[in-house]
Image (tube, rainbow, N blue to C red; front, side, top):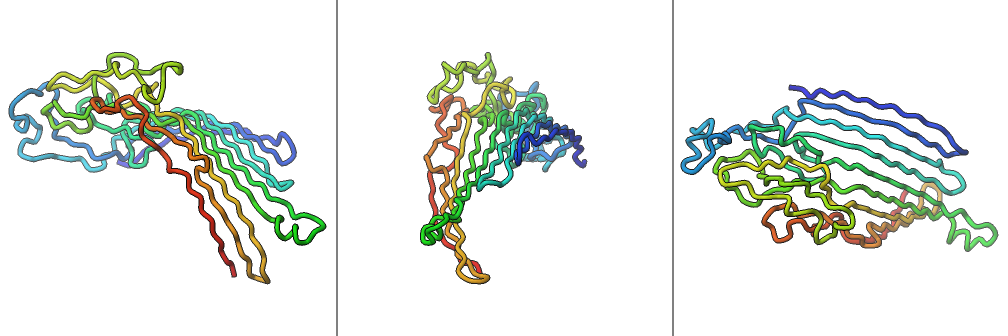
Length: 311
């Protein structure tokens, strides 16, 4: 079945000063029949779980598994408000700033989501799969700056040396992606359709003064489901996010004419120049780092330099 999508958007733009444009808007999207990841149709029903020969209790016991390839069973809802400010290039300077506040809910994990949330713990209870999307980023800010060093008047040597350099800056800051708490073992004896989740005992979110890299959420809020049963936790919790992330990049370049139809470009790029560490949370019950922000997102500081001849 083909996906069905309804989109809603509007915006208001106004030039608040010379060469400075501000826009405020809203974007909404509701989609159904989205292509999802493969779904096993041969899970033992929850009411039949128990010890002994589980294969005989599967819906299709004559097969090792029956899989629905890329089923069109996904649903999603997105609502986002944004504000954008843009200064057009003038006076050797321009910038673009874009901030979005949004909420994104779905019931399957797609192949290119920002976070890892999984799907299908229980093929018979798909309501547990509805939660925050792995791409739900409530706060998202992008800032780009471009400055061109103007040619110097007078001294021709300084003019040729210093003039024409361009400095670009790209800063991205956003909320951390949601994550799903899972268990490391399988005690269901039921061939479950996806990764298993624990029982949710109470709210696992911690206040800002209680939360730290070594203790990001309340690990006592999760308990292993009893033998031959599935957990009660949903795919994502509304208050459980990885730490926020930030990424800053610089580019410095200069294009020097040599003669007609020939120029030489010098360029230096700095990715994460301040070597900022962005952490990811371990959400596997039973792991030694459960509840700790030990994973690392984005790479280390990288600086590259080069020259290119155009002719």
